Length: 240
Image (cartoon, rainbow, N blue to C red; front, side, top):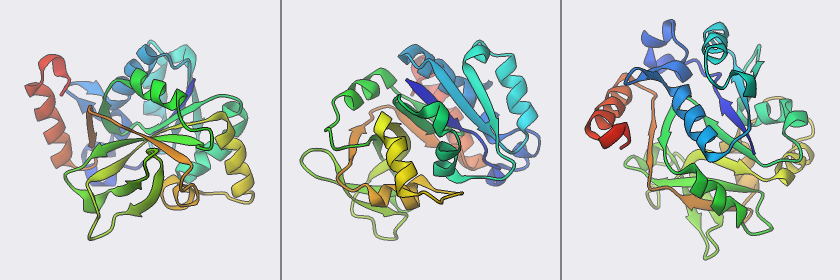
């Protein structure tokens, strides 16, 4: 399996920390967020990685070159932001004919990715992706899903004021080999493209789901960063 770790964000809400550090390298207990992703996905069997850059790209490149994963990571620079789906389209030649793990490297996620991969391997044949789900404490700020008996997404509500549940999209996905072909056909003239707002609404009943019991937090503000570090300090072996 291949993985794309989306790492091009500006991290404006985390300033002044992100004035000199890209958001994907913000440290949690002294370790960059990116290191948590690469270590866990390596252990789960991911063989190749793409890391896209935009803001402070040299810092990301320096981290990768100095890391144990340097020979398996391909850095791709975006002069302008393409959006989550646009990054997939821009790298479709690399991604074709294999399952693809996709996540935002500026979030903190600690879970059993091997179980996630095993769940995807059993996805219904009509489904093009498997979406990780979690129970959120702030459903108004998340994409909330409704599921059918086959655990497929039948409705998706992105950041609505009165969400129907707390079951949320973790923005962590596994796309099947057919997904890139579908994406190219569905958006033949797309330049920039967003997975949450443009792609997911067109895939109702074609997205399988897997609920995680692991730890997930958007490291988007100084408060969320502080909360993540507090959680990690309290947890045995640093895993909430």
